[in-house]
Amino acid sequence: MKKKKLKKSGIIIFVFIFLVIALLSAYFIFSSCLKLNVKDTSISVGSKYKESVSASFLGKDLSKKIKKEGKVNTKKVGTYEIKYTVKHLLFKKSKTVKVEVKDNIKPEIKLKDAKTVFFATGVEYKDPGFSAKDNIDGDITKKVKTTSNIDKNKEGTYEVTYTVKDKAGNKAEAKRKVIYTKPNTNGVSVLNYHFFYDPDKGEGCNEGNCEKISDFKQQLNYLKENNFKTLTIKEFRDWMYGELEIPEKSVLITVDDGAFGTGKHNGNHLNPILEEYEMHATLFLITSWWDIENYRGEYLDIESHTNDMHTGNVCKEQSRGAKMLCSSNDYVMNDLKKSIEITKSKIAFCYPFYVYNETTTRQVKEAGFELAFIGGGRKATKTTDKWHIPRFQIVKTTPLDRFIQIVN
Image (cartoon, rainbow, N blue to C red; front, side):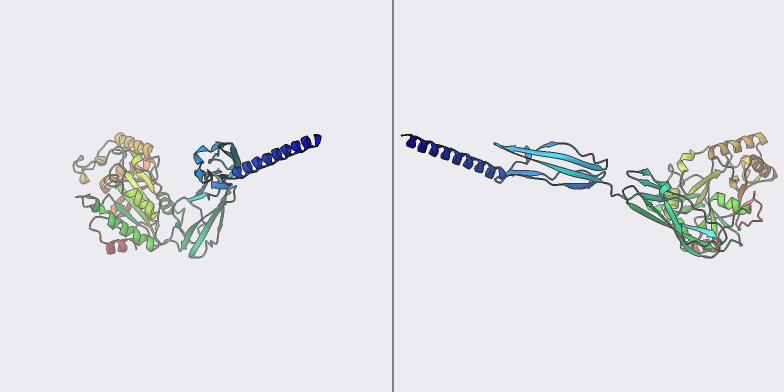
């Protein structure tokens, strides 16, 4: 009897163990059918983290049931962990993945002034300046290294290379061309423009001293293709005073008044074109007529054309009746002082209508201006009277061959 009971108990235990094993096997088999697909990944800092995760059970999509713990700060370099969990019936699966946010964006080097600059032989190379910025490290200008092959005493085309690395090892590089030519001995053509217009935009100009945008660009193209240096007003001043040698092919571009096509408020042609060609010009602005902020630009210097004395037909028996010629000394000096306050410069002055006399010349000197410009149609040399510097007027009817003759 005992043997039968033992045998029966053994069978029950065996069946129980078998069922347990079968159930566990079934559980693990079906548990393995619960799929959670996700893997470690890396992204660039500042980019969007796009989760690539899915879940399924025996072909049934369970992606919407996935729960997530943790988050990724895409704006900060680092390694982040995210835990994904999915539950279905009696089954549950979890995976923890690593998301590495990397800095693989190069810094940016910005060169001040043009990518091609000009010097006279013998003149020490002075870099126009540069800056460097990184998306993570911020301002890294101090880390920039420069190398060059310049020989200031020999004519030729040289190169300056700027390199910088951020903390992540990303490297940026920029280059500037430096052209050395013999010093100027034949004088400088000072070009004088007034207004700019674009017929393709429906703009018109009835003044004789207007210049079509297409003609202006054609002239700048000639200067660029023939390696002319367009001077800043400071460079021209230093050359006139014997403090700087400039390249043989140098010109000074000047623009009078600040009217149509020169400012943001009245056509906005001048600065965009100067920036496109990386060429310098000087604007003689009538400072009370328009806000100086309309004219600010990297390649445009702003000097005085009086504050409010650009008015004709005022003075009897005076050239063009120019207001400056017969106004009281106090009136003129106060006007010049106001203009200087606005431009914050005393480098150069331009006489209204190109006219002047002994009194106005004296007033300009007493106001502190170092140069003054008129008309005249001839080149400026170091021996030219600094307060009566001649200019070539470029107008609507000036053909390219005449322009080429003027600058050469």
